Amino acid sequence: MRTVLVTGFLGSGKTTFLLQIIRYLTAQQKTFAVIVNEIGEVGIDNQMLKQVGANVWEVLGGCICCTSATGLVGALDEAVHNYHPDYVLVEPSGIADPAKIKAVFESRDTTSDETLKAIALVDSDRIQLLIKAVYPLLASGIEISETVFITKSDVASAASVKEAEALIKEINPTANVSPVSLKTQLPDSLLATVL
Amino acid sequence: MTADLFEPFVADLEIRLEQFSASDYRTILQVLFTTLTAEIIACQPDFVGHVKGFCRGQGTDYLRVSFVSEQTGVDITGEWSHHPESAELTINVNVLGLQRPVLEQILERTVSQHQKLSGTFSVNRRSGWFRQRNPITEDGKFDD
Image (cartoon, rainbow over all chains, first blue to last red; front, side):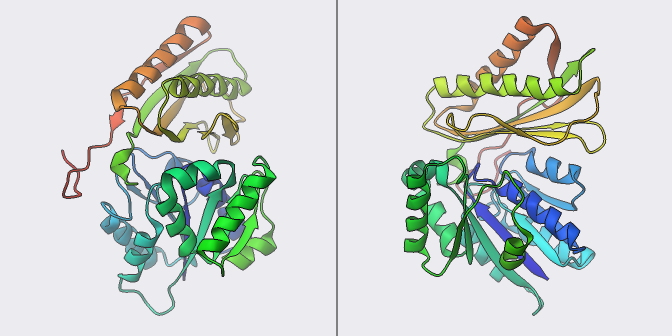
């Protein structure tokens, strides 16, 4: 079983990307569970993912990197033991610290066939603002990820995309980096590689 | 940055239409969120994280609304093929630098303006309007 952790700041496209993964996994006839974390007591993303038919576990009212870390562990255990999915997709809140979430995963008692793959989304359209306002969160997500998607490359300027690329390479030189637009479904070949 | 630096809040609303086509829901959400986010930006928050909405329709119908910046504007995705008399709308606002009461006033004003101006649809509060996240205490637990 593989856990896929999709990180990114608020509004970076995490839910849209998750929908694309769900479409892909459904077409591949893979089973999956989704864990959604939002800081508000009433979620938006969980409602939408349920509406498209996904099995959703909700962790609401706090971040799974800190105040709701036990909620994440409980949801993961429940999803794994009761549902036995091929994949568990985790969407943390946009202000969660990805490195802390990874530490929560690693602290769990897991079976040997459970693996974690982290994918970071970086909003190229707001890259300068994000560097200024939330650099530690941005860097944390990039650091732990094998794959980093630079989102909104269709609306951001070429200079912003380039700036995002340079930042990512500086923080994590080994990451696979791709500028994407999530307005259209990503190619199966790309999703197969990153999952 | 931690969760307690944001002042997130959620509003549960009901949109009620009569004698309109299914596409009107999309238009109404576009107008409502364009006004709401313009009002928020006019109040000069330090940082707009994400203003988003979810409108649940009949069957698998849904519309998701997202706003992160003036440059990209309000983005609406989803399928809406039926025409229900009413639909539930949840709005979630995550901005930095505006206190929750200010955000509540903005939303209250926006909704009220639309009801006065339009007369073609109504936006009503559902129970639990402005359900708020409890503040995080110093020991990291939620304070009741």
